[in-house]
Image 1 (cartoon, rainbow, N blue to C red):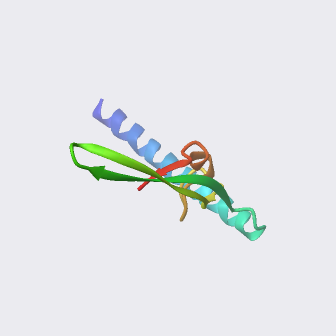
Image 2: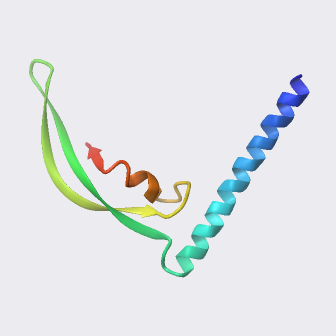
Length: 90
């Protein structure tokens, strides 16, 4: 049983590493054509703690956040993830 489980873990790990390397290679090809990175509009908010366990929330503005057009983060957050998380708290 341990041998089967060990083999399955090794196969899953090898598949994950292979998927990451293929994703990295595709991103490099996209970068040669100028389409590897994009931008997403992100709203920034500042949370300031006040007395009495209260918080004040201030809108700091909207910025263009760079993102990579890939499955995994390669130097920047993936665009698919950043488009679903367009609010940044600081």
